[in-house]
View 1 (cartoon, rainbow, N blue to C red):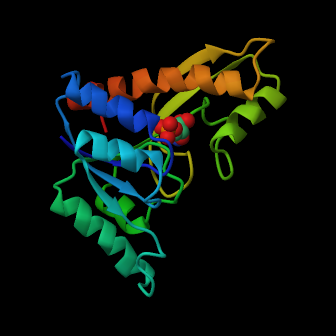
View 2: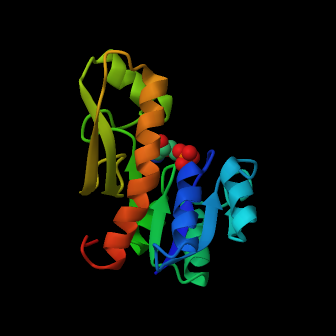
View 3: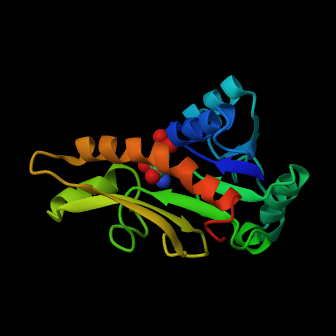
Length: 198
Ligand code: GRF
């Protein structure tokens, strides 16, 4: 498969996926990074690994209507013959045109056990803080399909972790992020092998 990763932040999941490609765990080629933030860590990582970067945001393409703006994404994805879109800390909503053209071919990772602790505003440290505040004893990660609504697509994989009395949002984030790095590539491999149907 040809993969395009969408990221806006530090890009540690992006790096983990690239490493899985480099060391032969994945058969797929990570061909493109799409980002709305040209100064994010993920862009630096793309340079380090020789992956092409496409920077796109409303600011970069002012004056386009929604359909035209969506078309820019779709054209770029088609140019790179992308089979699978992997969201890894992408902070913008996916354009409807992209969801339409890539139905069941977009996956996301969320740092909690959906359907709990998901939806609008539930990103980054907010998620872990909500988990700690709710005093639940279990959190984890969810890898799911992406549709028009935040965090509501079909769940493909989940992994739970215990929330200890001594955990705060930062220790929990660290624990879960380490698991994300391992299991995102694992799920992509299962998709490659047809064991997880998308
Ligand atoms: C991860 O926690 C992921 O679950 C969420 O965004 C974060 C991205 O982190 N969707 P990084 O940029 O991969 O380090």
